[in-house]
Image (cartoon, rainbow, N blue to C red; front, side, top):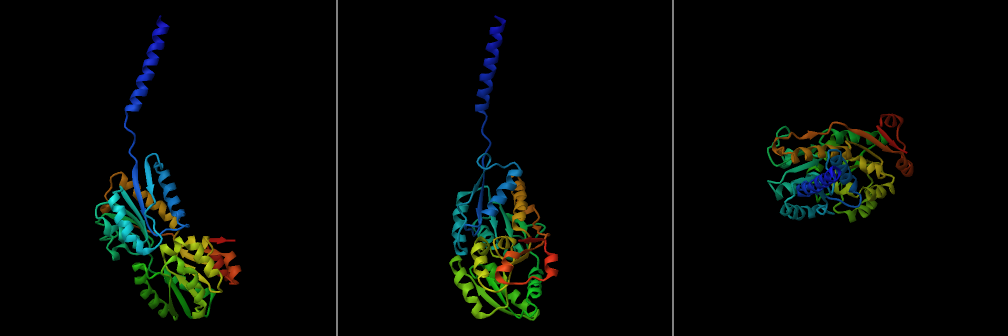
Length: 326
């Protein structure tokens, strides 16, 4: 009798526990929407963000949903994508690049925005100051005013008689267009003759690069560009078919076949973006979160590309490299 009563009590407790578990509300799924110019090669940043969020306890499908349907192919598509995104009311917008971040900020002044930009966010109205953004956007900036000068100096080590330098950018990005004039002045100050090389859309990459040789630049400087980074394999392969050395503003392009880069790792910076997302989801106000500036710069050289282009990399440069791709 006692044994039967025990069995009954255990069964009742089990049923009660199961009922209580079913009655408990499920943890809310936090919605994070991504906005930038993406392509077949853009998944590395999505993956870096997901991995970093996972390390902070955010598991996709369990307590967080990463919405990627607002990634677009071209800069001119960003305003419309940002407007559609804002109507969906995600908890946070993560934007990559100044052009996409400005589009997000114009679309909403209330949804928190966490950005990764390659410029000074205060110049484009994203923040009032780096220490106190004061608006609904904060995040990470890869700005470093002297990087382009150092990139040109690296090219001069490869091409000692460097005179004519092609500046590769997209005029569809207001940020890139505004940067060209200052870079042209910098090139002239260093005794170079700058040449604008405008790649407006992904389909222009191959024909524009194929025509570059006719303009006879000694080297190429590729500006920070989310569109060109998203299509980095196409860009790297197109330039590899020429004998022209190129320096990039993103190491991901060199990993995809570019010659060399001098820049912070954007994959690593997306891990910092995840930390900001975590703070905002826990209640922090973007207006009060200081904008972080990238501090670690790496020199990456692709020796396979150098061999394919028949470009000799000086020993001093090889010894300085943080990473070599063989």
